[in-house]
Length: 434
Image (cartoon, rainbow, N blue to C red; front, side):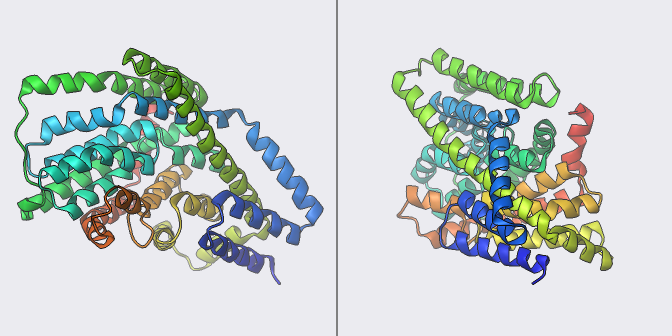
């Protein structure tokens, strides 16, 4: 049996383990160590597993994860989700689909501190969905806008997915954050454009609400000003080189705790809950990263990625064709795999091909995360939709998935734009010299 065939069987086994519900990190580690034991020796595989585990947990730059997670929890405790939605609702709520527009803006704002799609959709929906239902918004349209808006939490910096990709692919986290700014903003604008068009065609989907006087808008702006300043200072300082990623996360963590104190939200229970949740999430992510690195070593031993790259070169397929094939594969797998599992499964396979094609790994990271985001909303998995269904069980899943269709079309258009115009992701890092 050839080593390439063993690599393919390893991928199939990994998909089966994930389908049976085994945790992502455990599945990656089992296949990685098992494959290495088969190809080299059990003793060498165990030694390699120990080395990878020790090197991973002792990496200084990995400290950025728990610190950014703790920053997100502190910002949540400070009331960031409600504040971001409220300021947007007061400015655009009087327009057709205004509360849906406010939901997208709220998701973009909170996504900048949460770094998580599921956290963003859950927190913003808890505020926005009751308001939209109270004002007569169509249930499918309301949940579709929230599910789509929640995906902004994955891409807009500081993004947990980009941090994990940067660690796995050994790329600059500062460059990845800078590269994500324009795609993240254009993605939000595309969603807002979709809401505008849909409500233009059928105004009953998102009725306008009463206009908020200007004297009531500015107090809402002042309530988010401190959080916005903190985000700009932390992410901007990282992108222009004032801080290393770990230093930026530490500054954000201390700053967000200061915001909680300023807003009189600090308590022993709040600190305990934030620390507990951060530790649980960090432990899960560390296991996933270690498993992904072990799986990556297995894939590199099989030579599967090099074989795929050689096949592409023999076929004389250009970079555009190769990227389109990758996009199709990622979208198909994204319909049955969790986003993080998809990224960690395909990065070791696709990244060497990207390098051989002469494409930027920074651009590929944005492309991969952007494609991964679509998996959060399209069936049959659509985790964002299921999170919403848990919050509004009276709205059928079918209604929610139908409501996401216009936003899915927008997602595909935006992904095509990112492929056609790589400068969307590469221009800002080049200007900043991140």
